[in-house]
Length: 254
Image (cartoon, rainbow, N blue to C red; front, side):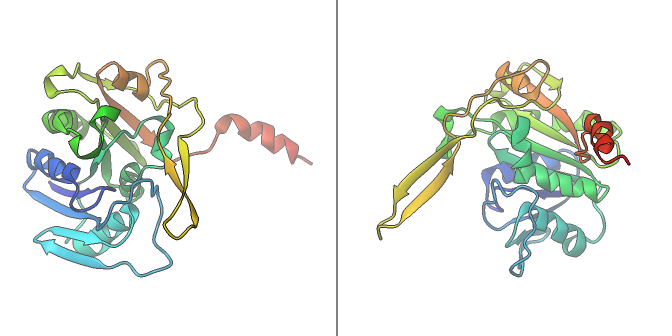
């Protein structure tokens, strides 16, 4: 089985090395094509206003000067000798839960794989605020990653779908199990906006994630993580709101 690994934290991110260990339990044909620098929050963006450069670091290990979507595109079109059987994106440093998936470069890399018709899975390691910085532990992801992926590889994926996996911020032995749950939604004003002045006297603004309230709903990814479970959520690419179709169409009826 040929596996393509990518992420949004960059080619040197600790989570990517964890993902390599997980993938090595599934195959010995592992390829990496990841952004050269961190691209958190890049979403499903493409680099269109400047050239994207490809660099080889070692056999089967490449980086691109672009977004996670760029990395998957380059991996499929330029790097790999043929289509992969599986695309794994992560392990992201931080949660990708609820409506945060719309911002996530990690999830978007898997989304790009799904658009290409390849089985694609995003993996993220949630961490507590106390463990931020260099102290983030990937222990739960490393211990449970292959246990989650094994059954997923046996299950059929519907066309243009992907799976989003989040590991709780716990020691591996404290994880309570795995839940298949729906995407949750946050009920808050998004994050913080830090305003300050640079050394030259010009104002700047920095978006932050402080003050975010997580409001778990029934049988959601937010609830699963808050209760110590790994969340597994199938996502699809059709954003059409079917319930509004008839109502809107009536507004244009002759």
